[in-house]
Image (cartoon, rainbow, N blue to C red):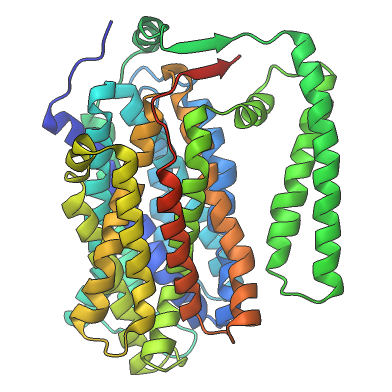
Length: 510
């Protein structure tokens, strides 16, 4: 039994929801730092305020993926219930966020908003793997990249468009400008409508059909049944590794405290290292106690024994998303300080620069939309890993070029650096997922896509914890250097991508 070949408009409909999802993400990426600064945040404190976004993804995405694999609603299907619930919550959050009365409230709303967007977004990746044959997956992810580019382009330009039509782009100290507020309102409405379109206009295969597809592909997947003794032994290993990891995390935390280092580093020492140790310890005790038939143990063990392609892509994803997060956090402050020479959030120069950042983000997204369908053609003539390498190197060079700009003309700042970034963005959104989806079984598509996103959110947490420390310690709090670090990180990701072999057999642990 084989999945049928879908037509252009069917792929269009099943991907259309990403238009709204990316409008939400783009408004968040382009404006949240501006909102934080307006509400009184210092530049060096912005990364720690952004921790909510990646930490939420780290928790929410694998859980949503795990449960969406096991969901079936007679009318809404497998993934679409999560699309719809996430859309409702995210739309409400987008309406509330720009009305935040104080900094702590805005930081909390970022957490809620990002969690809601993730509930909708994560199953969309698995949706492509569910509905399309291997021959069509690259096209499916390219279509998603197209809508991501269009949605982000429109959302990033919204404050500038509204300013052009007379909506106020400045406000009193501590007040979010109306141009930002109304942009979030429009984005919230668009988010819900676009996702609802996909929910109503798409179909899903039944659990019986998905099982038949997986059985038809049984020659391609090797299933490994693990005896109880294996879990007990693995639990002992997790317990030992967890204790060692927790000790390292606590010692690192004490060093940060003792030497009065930047508090952002606690995210790394407590939030990642120590928490990772605690997770391993819990897993160790549970498996040693023969309590291993649950979602928590499945998630931990499958992370340990992830498919080979996922392991190969992990470092590529890490350095790619570290770079992107540095761009999203620091571009506004880098442009306003390095090019416009101002830190005054109430000044015309600052808000002109901040709007220009919105224009830059809009441009790299429209470039991504334009090249989305060209990348599969290049990959077909060369290879997917070479295509990804080329795109990431161009993106890194584009990001680093901002350091050398002194004349903020529309071409030199809004377009030239963003050409490479846009090409990289299109590739990041499609090529790794196309490499991965063909090596995954239908029964764990959502879960593995959620685990794969660990390598999106972990680098963001690392960036949020160490970038502020690096910039304040070594670069005199000049945010432009964060973009140089980000550019170098993206080029490194491109070089690592050349080592990937995406034609491998997957072993599935049960």
